[in-house]
Length: 171
Image (cartoon, rainbow, N blue to C red; front, side, top):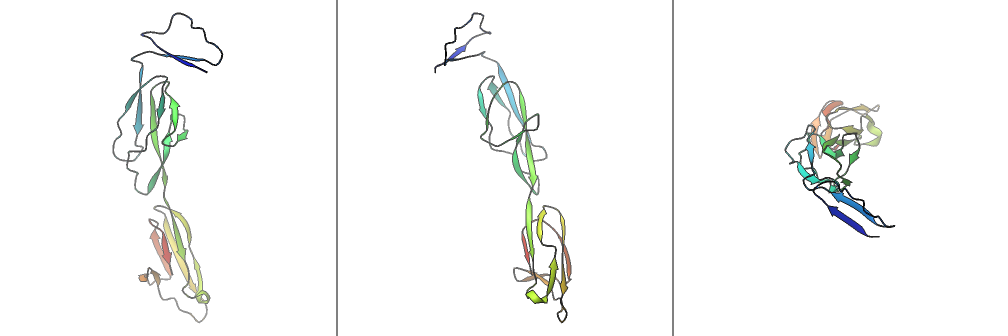
């Protein structure tokens, strides 16, 4: 099929014969639409762009810095749909795309240095900023000594609390 594009100073007044397999479209010069971006809690700026109505627009990568503990999820349109950078749409009117952020998630692994030495609770996956408590209960004949991470003591208390802000591997 063929595509015929007509550019006019106003809407066409005469009928155009559209043959089978032919797509007929027109655009009016100066019919610019503004595409803007909202940081939604992020920081930095992204310039609005002016796009001709009826043309295809490709969503850009996010130029905003994510809020602490978050990562960019996609661009949310005015009705709540989320699109990834690189998605295309036909511009019909002005549009604001809002950055959508999701909280980072971290894994906490907690284990006894000697498997028969006792039980440990609190390991799992936690959202950024969550208060995490790991607890060691020594078996009979064992005494809790400390929580260590990467060979360094981080607590001498059997119940150790911290804020989830990175993956942790505690023994």
